[in-house]
Length: 512
Image (tube, rainbow, N blue to C red):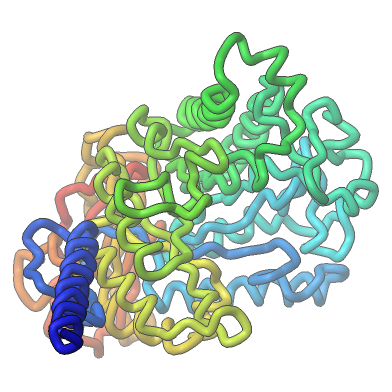
Protein backbone atom coordinates (compact mmCIF):
# COMPACT_ATOMS: atom_id res chain seq x y z
CA UNK A 1 0.00 0.00 0.00
CA UNK A 2 2.83 2.32 0.93
CA UNK A 3 4.58 1.57 -2.35
CA UNK A 4 1.41 2.32 -4.31
CA UNK A 5 1.08 5.63 -2.47
CA UNK A 6 4.67 6.66 -3.36
CA UNK A 7 4.13 5.70 -7.01
CA UNK A 8 1.01 7.89 -7.15
CA UNK A 9 2.83 10.81 -5.50
CA UNK A 10 5.74 10.46 -7.94
CA UNK A 11 3.44 10.39 -10.97
CA UNK A 12 1.57 13.49 -9.74
CA UNK A 13 4.88 15.30 -9.20
CA UNK A 14 6.07 14.39 -12.67
CA UNK A 15 2.82 15.55 -14.23
CA UNK A 16 2.98 18.82 -12.30
CA UNK A 17 6.61 19.36 -13.31
CA UNK A 18 5.80 18.69 -16.99
CA UNK A 19 2.82 21.04 -16.84
CA UNK A 20 4.94 23.76 -15.22
CA UNK A 21 7.63 23.47 -17.91
CA UNK A 22 4.94 23.61 -20.59
CA UNK A 23 3.44 26.71 -18.98
CA UNK A 24 6.85 28.38 -18.82
CA UNK A 25 7.48 27.53 -22.46
CA UNK A 26 4.10 28.91 -23.43
CA UNK A 27 4.76 32.04 -21.42
CA UNK A 28 8.02 32.57 -23.26
CA UNK A 29 6.24 32.28 -26.60
CA UNK A 30 3.96 35.15 -25.57
CA UNK A 31 6.67 37.65 -26.36
CA UNK A 32 8.34 36.05 -29.38
CA UNK A 33 7.54 36.56 -33.07
CA UNK A 34 5.24 33.93 -34.54
CA UNK A 35 7.98 32.39 -36.69
CA UNK A 36 10.38 31.81 -33.78
CA UNK A 37 11.47 28.19 -33.49
CA UNK A 38 10.48 26.59 -30.18
CA UNK A 39 11.48 25.23 -27.78
CA UNK A 40 14.03 27.75 -26.61
CA UNK A 41 16.76 26.64 -24.27
CA UNK A 42 15.51 26.71 -20.70
CA UNK A 43 18.08 29.31 -19.66
CA UNK A 44 16.86 31.72 -22.32
CA UNK A 45 20.25 31.67 -24.03
CA UNK A 46 18.93 30.71 -27.48
CA UNK A 47 20.26 32.27 -30.65
CA UNK A 48 17.18 34.50 -30.63
CA UNK A 49 18.51 36.30 -27.56
CA UNK A 50 22.19 36.10 -28.47
CA UNK A 51 22.35 37.04 -32.15
CA UNK A 52 21.25 40.53 -33.13
CA UNK A 53 20.15 41.11 -36.73
CA UNK A 54 22.57 43.18 -38.83
CA UNK A 55 22.97 46.89 -38.16
CA UNK A 56 20.15 48.63 -40.11
CA UNK A 57 20.31 51.85 -42.09
CA UNK A 58 17.48 53.42 -40.07
CA UNK A 59 17.56 53.19 -36.29
CA UNK A 60 17.18 55.47 -33.27
CA UNK A 61 20.39 55.40 -31.23
CA UNK A 62 19.69 57.79 -28.39
CA UNK A 63 21.40 58.70 -25.14
CA UNK A 64 19.94 60.73 -22.29
CA UNK A 65 22.56 63.32 -21.30
CA UNK A 66 21.55 64.34 -17.79
CA UNK A 67 22.29 67.80 -16.41
CA UNK A 68 20.38 67.70 -13.10
CA UNK A 69 23.03 67.97 -10.36
CA UNK A 70 25.62 67.68 -13.15
CA UNK A 71 25.16 63.91 -13.23
CA UNK A 72 26.52 63.56 -16.77
CA UNK A 73 27.41 67.18 -17.43
CA UNK A 74 28.56 69.72 -16.35
CA UNK A 75 31.04 68.62 -13.71
CA UNK A 76 32.73 72.03 -13.67
CA UNK A 77 30.82 75.15 -12.59
CA UNK A 78 31.14 78.12 -14.98
CA UNK A 79 32.07 80.93 -12.61
CA UNK A 80 34.80 82.59 -14.69
CA UNK A 81 36.30 82.44 -18.18
CA UNK A 82 38.60 79.51 -17.38
CA UNK A 83 35.92 77.32 -15.80
CA UNK A 84 33.51 78.30 -18.58
CA UNK A 85 35.89 76.90 -21.20
CA UNK A 86 36.45 73.80 -19.08
CA UNK A 87 32.69 73.25 -18.95
CA UNK A 88 32.48 73.51 -22.73
CA UNK A 89 35.41 71.13 -23.17
CA UNK A 90 33.73 68.54 -20.94
CA UNK A 91 30.72 68.52 -23.23
CA UNK A 92 32.85 68.27 -26.37
CA UNK A 93 34.65 65.24 -24.96
CA UNK A 94 31.34 63.52 -24.20
CA UNK A 95 30.06 64.27 -27.70
CA UNK A 96 33.28 62.94 -29.23
CA UNK A 97 32.78 59.64 -27.42
CA UNK A 98 29.13 59.40 -28.43
CA UNK A 99 29.98 60.12 -32.06
CA UNK A 100 32.70 57.45 -32.04
CA UNK A 101 30.14 54.98 -30.70
CA UNK A 102 27.79 55.88 -33.59
CA UNK A 103 25.07 57.36 -31.42
CA UNK A 104 22.84 59.55 -33.60
CA UNK A 105 20.57 61.28 -31.04
CA UNK A 106 21.66 63.25 -27.98
CA UNK A 107 18.74 63.88 -25.63
CA UNK A 108 20.05 66.80 -23.58
CA UNK A 109 18.27 67.71 -20.36
CA UNK A 110 17.35 71.31 -21.12
CA UNK A 111 14.51 72.08 -18.73
CA UNK A 112 15.35 70.43 -15.45
CA UNK A 113 12.69 71.14 -12.81
CA UNK A 114 11.37 74.62 -13.34
CA UNK A 115 14.82 75.86 -14.41
CA UNK A 116 16.74 75.72 -17.68
CA UNK A 117 20.19 75.71 -19.33
CA UNK A 118 19.54 78.53 -21.80
CA UNK A 119 18.71 82.25 -21.43
CA UNK A 120 14.94 82.01 -21.02
CA UNK A 121 12.44 84.82 -20.67
CA UNK A 122 10.16 82.45 -18.78
CA UNK A 123 12.26 80.46 -16.29
CA UNK A 124 15.49 80.89 -14.30
CA UNK A 125 18.91 79.41 -15.02
CA UNK A 126 19.49 76.02 -13.45
CA UNK A 127 21.94 75.58 -10.59
CA UNK A 128 23.94 72.92 -12.45
CA UNK A 129 25.75 75.51 -14.59
CA UNK A 130 27.21 77.86 -11.97
CA UNK A 131 26.28 76.44 -8.57
CA UNK A 132 23.65 79.16 -8.12
CA UNK A 133 20.08 79.34 -9.40
CA UNK A 134 19.41 82.05 -12.01
CA UNK A 135 23.06 82.97 -12.46
CA UNK A 136 24.16 83.55 -16.05
CA UNK A 137 27.08 81.24 -16.95
CA UNK A 138 28.42 83.75 -19.47
CA UNK A 139 27.42 81.81 -22.58
CA UNK A 140 24.43 79.96 -24.01
CA UNK A 141 24.97 76.26 -23.18
CA UNK A 142 22.07 75.07 -25.33
CA UNK A 143 23.22 76.96 -28.43
CA UNK A 144 26.74 75.66 -27.85
CA UNK A 145 25.49 72.08 -27.41
CA UNK A 146 23.43 72.24 -30.62
CA UNK A 147 26.37 73.58 -32.62
CA UNK A 148 28.79 70.95 -31.30
CA UNK A 149 26.33 68.09 -31.68
CA UNK A 150 25.58 69.05 -35.28
CA UNK A 151 29.31 69.34 -36.02
CA UNK A 152 29.53 65.65 -35.19
CA UNK A 153 26.58 64.67 -37.36
CA UNK A 154 24.21 63.91 -34.48
CA UNK A 155 20.78 65.30 -33.66
CA UNK A 156 20.08 67.22 -30.47
CA UNK A 157 16.71 66.78 -28.80
CA UNK A 158 15.81 69.15 -25.98
CA UNK A 159 14.71 67.10 -22.96
CA UNK A 160 11.99 68.81 -20.95
CA UNK A 161 10.96 67.62 -17.49
CA UNK A 162 7.31 68.60 -17.56
CA UNK A 163 5.05 68.15 -14.52
CA UNK A 164 7.56 68.30 -11.60
CA UNK A 165 8.36 71.93 -10.78
CA UNK A 166 11.02 71.78 -8.07
CA UNK A 167 11.71 70.49 -4.59
CA UNK A 168 10.16 72.47 -1.77
CA UNK A 169 13.61 73.02 -0.24
CA UNK A 170 14.72 74.80 -3.44
CA UNK A 171 11.71 77.10 -3.72
CA UNK A 172 13.32 80.14 -2.11
CA UNK A 173 16.67 79.60 -3.82
CA UNK A 174 15.25 79.86 -7.33
CA UNK A 175 14.59 83.58 -7.18
CA UNK A 176 11.88 85.87 -8.45
CA UNK A 177 11.49 84.07 -11.80
CA UNK A 178 10.55 80.74 -10.26
CA UNK A 179 7.11 79.27 -10.92
CA UNK A 180 6.24 79.82 -7.28
CA UNK A 181 6.58 83.56 -7.90
CA UNK A 182 5.22 83.83 -11.44
CA UNK A 183 2.41 81.23 -11.44
CA UNK A 184 1.76 79.93 -7.92
CA UNK A 185 -1.83 79.12 -8.92
CA UNK A 186 -0.58 76.28 -11.16
CA UNK A 187 1.31 74.43 -8.43
CA UNK A 188 0.41 71.68 -5.99
CA UNK A 189 2.53 70.31 -3.16
CA UNK A 190 2.95 66.55 -3.28
CA UNK A 191 5.49 64.81 -1.10
CA UNK A 192 8.65 66.91 -0.99
CA UNK A 193 8.02 68.72 -4.28
CA UNK A 194 5.85 71.18 -6.14
CA UNK A 195 4.15 69.95 -9.31
CA UNK A 196 2.15 71.55 -12.08
CA UNK A 197 -1.48 70.54 -11.71
CA UNK A 198 -2.29 68.87 -15.06
CA UNK A 199 -6.00 69.47 -14.53
CA UNK A 200 -5.60 73.23 -14.78
CA UNK A 201 -5.78 74.57 -18.36
CA UNK A 202 -3.07 77.05 -17.40
CA UNK A 203 -0.58 74.22 -16.85
CA UNK A 204 -0.89 73.08 -20.45
CA UNK A 205 -0.60 76.67 -21.66
CA UNK A 206 2.55 77.16 -19.56
CA UNK A 207 4.23 74.01 -20.90
CA UNK A 208 3.31 75.01 -24.44
CA UNK A 209 4.86 78.45 -23.94
CA UNK A 210 8.13 76.84 -22.82
CA UNK A 211 8.14 74.63 -25.93
CA UNK A 212 7.44 77.55 -28.24
CA UNK A 213 10.30 79.52 -26.73
CA UNK A 214 12.69 76.63 -27.36
CA UNK A 215 11.57 75.80 -30.88
CA UNK A 216 11.45 79.44 -31.97
CA UNK A 217 14.84 80.33 -30.54
CA UNK A 218 16.91 77.22 -31.24
CA UNK A 219 17.70 74.80 -34.06
CA UNK A 220 16.73 71.76 -32.01
CA UNK A 221 16.00 68.55 -33.91
CA UNK A 222 13.52 67.32 -31.33
CA UNK A 223 11.53 68.09 -28.20
CA UNK A 224 11.53 65.27 -25.65
CA UNK A 225 9.03 65.17 -22.78
CA UNK A 226 9.98 63.44 -19.55
CA UNK A 227 7.62 62.92 -16.63
CA UNK A 228 4.58 63.98 -18.66
CA UNK A 229 2.28 62.22 -16.23
CA UNK A 230 0.88 62.40 -12.74
CA UNK A 231 3.40 61.80 -9.95
CA UNK A 232 3.93 58.62 -7.98
CA UNK A 233 1.25 57.93 -5.36
CA UNK A 234 -1.15 59.89 -7.55
CA UNK A 235 -4.09 58.85 -5.39
CA UNK A 236 -3.05 61.44 -2.82
CA UNK A 237 -2.32 64.20 -5.34
CA UNK A 238 -4.25 67.24 -4.14
CA UNK A 239 -6.39 68.06 -7.16
CA UNK A 240 -9.86 67.54 -5.64
CA UNK A 241 -10.81 71.19 -6.11
CA UNK A 242 -9.52 71.16 -9.70
CA UNK A 243 -11.56 68.04 -10.46
CA UNK A 244 -14.66 69.59 -8.94
CA UNK A 245 -14.25 72.67 -11.13
CA UNK A 246 -13.20 71.03 -14.42
CA UNK A 247 -14.32 67.40 -14.17
CA UNK A 248 -17.63 67.99 -15.97
CA UNK A 249 -19.15 64.69 -14.94
CA UNK A 250 -16.20 62.51 -16.01
CA UNK A 251 -14.90 59.81 -13.71
CA UNK A 252 -11.63 60.96 -12.19
CA UNK A 253 -9.47 58.38 -13.96
CA UNK A 254 -10.68 59.38 -17.44
CA UNK A 255 -10.41 63.05 -16.52
CA UNK A 256 -6.79 62.68 -15.43
CA UNK A 257 -5.89 60.72 -18.56
CA UNK A 258 -7.49 63.46 -20.67
CA UNK A 259 -5.54 66.14 -18.80
CA UNK A 260 -2.19 64.58 -19.67
CA UNK A 261 -3.26 63.93 -23.25
CA UNK A 262 -4.34 67.57 -23.58
CA UNK A 263 -0.88 68.71 -22.46
CA UNK A 264 0.72 66.46 -25.07
CA UNK A 265 -1.66 67.52 -27.84
CA UNK A 266 -1.34 71.24 -27.15
CA UNK A 267 2.46 71.12 -27.05
CA UNK A 268 2.68 68.89 -30.14
CA UNK A 269 0.47 71.15 -32.21
CA UNK A 270 2.36 74.26 -31.09
CA UNK A 271 5.72 72.75 -32.03
CA UNK A 272 4.49 71.57 -35.43
CA UNK A 273 2.97 74.94 -36.24
CA UNK A 274 6.39 76.58 -35.81
CA UNK A 275 8.71 73.88 -37.18
CA UNK A 276 6.88 70.77 -38.41
CA UNK A 277 10.15 68.84 -38.83
CA UNK A 278 10.97 68.94 -35.11
CA UNK A 279 10.55 65.39 -33.80
CA UNK A 280 8.37 65.26 -30.68
CA UNK A 281 8.99 62.36 -28.34
CA UNK A 282 8.52 61.30 -24.74
CA UNK A 283 9.77 58.72 -22.26
CA UNK A 284 6.68 57.01 -20.81
CA UNK A 285 6.74 54.49 -17.99
CA UNK A 286 8.10 51.29 -19.55
CA UNK A 287 5.06 49.10 -18.91
CA UNK A 288 2.00 50.52 -20.62
CA UNK A 289 -0.53 48.44 -18.69
CA UNK A 290 -1.16 44.99 -17.24
CA UNK A 291 -1.07 42.34 -19.96
CA UNK A 292 -3.29 39.28 -20.12
CA UNK A 293 -0.58 37.01 -18.73
CA UNK A 294 1.81 39.49 -17.12
CA UNK A 295 1.15 41.99 -14.37
CA UNK A 296 2.89 45.37 -14.29
CA UNK A 297 3.09 44.86 -10.52
CA UNK A 298 1.30 48.11 -9.78
CA UNK A 299 3.58 50.31 -11.88
CA UNK A 300 2.30 51.04 -15.36
CA UNK A 301 1.91 54.15 -17.49
CA UNK A 302 -1.85 53.92 -17.82
CA UNK A 303 -2.77 52.31 -14.54
CA UNK A 304 -0.58 54.23 -12.10
CA UNK A 305 0.10 57.67 -13.60
CA UNK A 306 -2.63 58.24 -16.25
CA UNK A 307 -0.20 58.29 -19.16
CA UNK A 308 -1.86 56.91 -22.32
CA UNK A 309 1.16 56.89 -24.62
CA UNK A 310 -0.30 54.29 -26.98
CA UNK A 311 -3.26 56.59 -27.56
CA UNK A 312 -0.84 59.40 -28.43
CA UNK A 313 0.71 57.21 -31.12
CA UNK A 314 -2.72 56.28 -32.43
CA UNK A 315 -3.92 59.89 -32.44
CA UNK A 316 -0.71 61.04 -34.14
CA UNK A 317 0.41 63.50 -31.46
CA UNK A 318 3.74 61.82 -30.78
CA UNK A 319 6.50 61.11 -33.31
CA UNK A 320 8.67 58.81 -31.23
CA UNK A 321 8.60 56.99 -27.88
CA UNK A 322 11.54 56.08 -25.67
CA UNK A 323 9.75 54.03 -22.99
CA UNK A 324 11.79 53.65 -19.80
CA UNK A 325 12.17 49.87 -19.77
CA UNK A 326 14.64 49.58 -16.91
CA UNK A 327 13.70 45.95 -16.22
CA UNK A 328 14.74 42.42 -17.06
CA UNK A 329 13.19 39.05 -17.83
CA UNK A 330 9.39 38.86 -17.75
CA UNK A 331 9.29 42.49 -16.65
CA UNK A 332 10.95 43.49 -19.95
CA UNK A 333 10.24 41.14 -22.86
CA UNK A 334 6.42 40.90 -22.89
CA UNK A 335 6.07 44.64 -22.34
CA UNK A 336 8.56 45.41 -25.13
CA UNK A 337 6.51 43.11 -27.38
CA UNK A 338 3.40 45.08 -26.41
CA UNK A 339 5.05 48.32 -27.55
CA UNK A 340 6.14 46.63 -30.80
CA UNK A 341 2.51 45.75 -31.53
CA UNK A 342 1.26 49.32 -31.02
CA UNK A 343 3.75 51.60 -32.78
CA UNK A 344 1.23 52.98 -35.31
CA UNK A 345 4.12 53.37 -37.73
CA UNK A 346 6.16 55.55 -35.37
CA UNK A 347 9.57 54.75 -33.90
CA UNK A 348 9.45 53.12 -30.47
CA UNK A 349 12.97 52.75 -29.07
CA UNK A 350 13.06 51.10 -25.63
CA UNK A 351 15.12 52.94 -23.06
CA UNK A 352 17.56 50.60 -21.33
CA UNK A 353 18.67 51.09 -17.73
CA UNK A 354 22.37 50.59 -18.33
CA UNK A 355 23.10 52.26 -14.99
CA UNK A 356 21.99 49.00 -13.37
CA UNK A 357 25.18 47.43 -14.73
CA UNK A 358 27.24 49.45 -12.27
CA UNK A 359 28.32 47.64 -9.08
CA UNK A 360 27.02 50.55 -6.98
CA UNK A 361 23.57 50.18 -8.54
CA UNK A 362 22.18 46.66 -9.11
CA UNK A 363 25.35 45.11 -10.55
CA UNK A 364 23.45 43.50 -13.41
CA UNK A 365 25.21 40.88 -15.46
CA UNK A 366 26.19 42.26 -18.88
CA UNK A 367 24.21 39.49 -20.57
CA UNK A 368 20.93 41.05 -19.40
CA UNK A 369 21.47 44.18 -21.52
CA UNK A 370 22.99 42.23 -24.40
CA UNK A 371 19.94 39.96 -24.65
CA UNK A 372 17.62 42.97 -24.51
CA UNK A 373 19.53 44.66 -27.33
CA UNK A 374 19.24 41.55 -29.48
CA UNK A 375 15.54 41.24 -28.68
CA UNK A 376 14.84 44.86 -29.67
CA UNK A 377 16.18 44.28 -33.17
CA UNK A 378 14.60 40.84 -33.49
CA UNK A 379 11.22 42.40 -32.73
CA UNK A 380 11.69 45.16 -35.30
CA UNK A 381 11.48 47.99 -32.78
CA UNK A 382 12.72 51.41 -33.86
CA UNK A 383 15.98 51.55 -31.94
CA UNK A 384 17.44 51.94 -28.49
CA UNK A 385 17.98 54.63 -25.88
CA UNK A 386 20.41 54.54 -22.96
CA UNK A 387 20.09 55.98 -19.48
CA UNK A 388 22.42 57.56 -18.95
CA UNK A 389 25.40 58.96 -20.85
CA UNK A 390 28.12 58.51 -18.23
CA UNK A 391 27.47 54.79 -17.83
CA UNK A 392 27.91 54.41 -21.58
CA UNK A 393 31.02 56.55 -21.98
CA UNK A 394 32.59 54.98 -18.86
CA UNK A 395 32.24 51.62 -20.64
CA UNK A 396 30.62 49.96 -17.62
CA UNK A 397 30.99 46.19 -18.07
CA UNK A 398 32.15 46.75 -21.64
CA UNK A 399 28.92 48.22 -23.02
CA UNK A 400 30.66 50.97 -24.99
CA UNK A 401 33.05 48.49 -26.60
CA UNK A 402 30.19 46.15 -27.49
CA UNK A 403 28.14 48.88 -29.13
CA UNK A 404 31.06 50.35 -31.05
CA UNK A 405 32.54 47.08 -32.29
CA UNK A 406 29.60 44.71 -32.57
CA UNK A 407 26.13 46.22 -32.30
CA UNK A 408 26.77 49.52 -34.12
CA UNK A 409 29.44 48.64 -36.72
CA UNK A 410 28.07 51.31 -39.10
CA UNK A 411 26.33 54.67 -38.72
CA UNK A 412 22.53 54.82 -38.88
CA UNK A 413 19.99 57.49 -39.80
CA UNK A 414 16.86 58.22 -37.81
CA UNK A 415 13.71 56.74 -39.38
CA UNK A 416 12.05 59.31 -41.67
CA UNK A 417 8.86 61.00 -40.47
CA UNK A 418 6.87 60.13 -43.58
CA UNK A 419 3.60 61.00 -41.82
CA UNK A 420 4.81 64.63 -41.85
CA UNK A 421 6.29 64.76 -45.34
CA UNK A 422 7.10 62.35 -48.17
CA UNK A 423 8.64 64.78 -50.64
CA UNK A 424 12.32 64.17 -51.31
CA UNK A 425 14.93 66.93 -51.47
CA UNK A 426 16.75 67.87 -54.66
CA UNK A 427 19.83 65.87 -55.56
CA UNK A 428 23.07 67.65 -54.53
CA UNK A 429 25.07 69.39 -57.26
CA UNK A 430 28.86 69.39 -57.35
CA UNK A 431 30.32 72.88 -56.88
CA UNK A 432 34.03 72.13 -56.77
CA UNK A 433 36.56 69.37 -56.31
CA UNK A 434 40.13 70.47 -55.64
CA UNK A 435 43.33 69.56 -53.91
CA UNK A 436 44.10 71.31 -50.64
CA UNK A 437 47.32 71.09 -48.67
CA UNK A 438 48.99 68.82 -51.20
CA UNK A 439 47.67 65.44 -50.05
CA UNK A 440 43.99 66.22 -49.41
CA UNK A 441 41.01 66.70 -51.66
CA UNK A 442 38.04 68.89 -50.85
CA UNK A 443 34.59 68.37 -52.32
CA UNK A 444 31.94 71.09 -52.14
CA UNK A 445 28.31 70.78 -53.16
CA UNK A 446 24.96 72.54 -52.98
CA UNK A 447 21.28 71.71 -53.23
CA UNK A 448 18.22 73.72 -54.18
CA UNK A 449 16.35 72.36 -51.15
CA UNK A 450 16.78 74.47 -48.02
CA UNK A 451 17.44 73.23 -44.49
CA UNK A 452 19.11 69.95 -45.43
CA UNK A 453 21.76 67.69 -44.01
CA UNK A 454 23.85 65.34 -46.10
CA UNK A 455 24.92 61.70 -46.07
CA UNK A 456 28.31 60.74 -47.48
CA UNK A 457 28.75 57.21 -48.80
CA UNK A 458 31.81 55.31 -50.04
CA UNK A 459 32.03 51.97 -51.83
CA UNK A 460 34.43 49.98 -53.97
CA UNK A 461 31.56 49.40 -56.39
CA UNK A 462 29.75 51.84 -58.62
CA UNK A 463 27.03 52.97 -58.51
CA UNK A 464 27.29 53.22 -54.74
CA UNK A 465 24.58 51.23 -52.98
CA UNK A 466 23.05 53.86 -50.68
CA UNK A 467 20.68 51.32 -49.14
CA UNK A 468 23.60 49.51 -47.52
CA UNK A 469 24.53 51.07 -44.14
CA UNK A 470 28.04 49.63 -44.46
CA UNK A 471 28.64 52.30 -47.13
CA UNK A 472 27.75 55.25 -44.87
CA UNK A 473 30.80 57.35 -44.04
CA UNK A 474 29.05 60.07 -42.06
CA UNK A 475 26.06 62.36 -41.78
CA UNK A 476 26.96 66.04 -41.88
CA UNK A 477 25.32 69.45 -41.61
CA UNK A 478 28.14 70.89 -43.79
CA UNK A 479 28.30 71.23 -47.59
CA UNK A 480 31.91 70.13 -47.93
CA UNK A 481 34.07 67.08 -47.23
CA UNK A 482 37.85 66.84 -47.03
CA UNK A 483 39.67 63.51 -47.31
CA UNK A 484 43.23 62.32 -47.80
CA UNK A 485 44.39 61.43 -51.30
CA UNK A 486 46.57 58.79 -49.65
CA UNK A 487 43.57 57.04 -48.14
CA UNK A 488 41.21 54.40 -49.43
CA UNK A 489 38.61 56.94 -50.59
CA UNK A 490 40.97 58.09 -53.37
CA UNK A 491 42.49 54.81 -54.55
CA UNK A 492 39.80 52.19 -54.08
CA UNK A 493 36.46 53.85 -53.37
CA UNK A 494 33.73 55.75 -55.15
CA UNK A 495 31.90 58.49 -53.26
CA UNK A 496 28.23 59.44 -53.27
CA UNK A 497 26.45 62.29 -51.49
CA UNK A 498 22.72 62.55 -50.82
CA UNK A 499 20.63 65.31 -49.28
CA UNK A 500 18.57 64.54 -46.19
CA UNK A 501 15.77 66.92 -45.28
CA UNK A 502 14.81 67.57 -41.66
CA UNK A 503 12.00 65.01 -41.87
CA UNK A 504 14.55 62.32 -42.79
CA UNK A 505 13.61 62.04 -46.48
CA UNK A 506 16.62 61.32 -48.70
CA UNK A 507 17.40 62.51 -52.22
CA UNK A 508 18.94 60.62 -55.10
CA UNK A 509 22.72 60.56 -54.67
CA UNK A 510 25.33 62.65 -56.40
CA UNK A 511 27.81 60.05 -57.69
CA UNK A 512 31.49 61.07 -57.71
